[in-house]
Length: 150
Image (cartoon, rainbow, N blue to C red; front, side, top):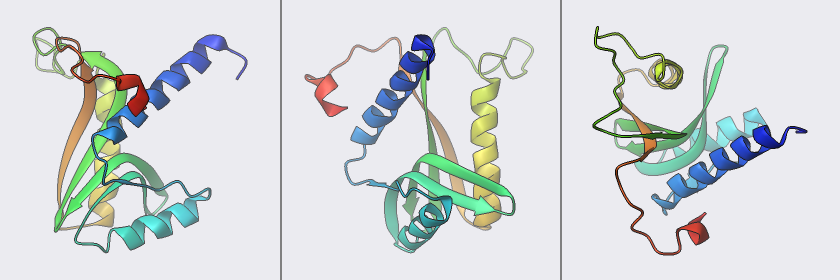
């Protein structure tokens, strides 16, 4: 990348992802170089009764997704999409006053919905819960040495 601004954004996204992984120390990173290897590793790990995967690779038909955090517990999956976006629970809403999806959140929610669609097609009959992991503006950091966790 030749653009310092884009480089800073990419670095920030990487740091947020690394911080999110610190919340799940039991998690396993699926960091295989090829999509096929990542799909195979994800599939093998999902044979376990319970697991937490980072960058899980799921494919159905032509659709391939890499899920930031995928937690499996029996017949339940939690899809957690990590975003380098902050929110304030009293000031930010996914919906407009007219009940439509806010343009500020549309791309994030579309991303999660697409990943959920692929998961549902790959694992019919499994319960899937979806979450966005965001930084909350109204909270102060409570962790000393936060930088060292990244």
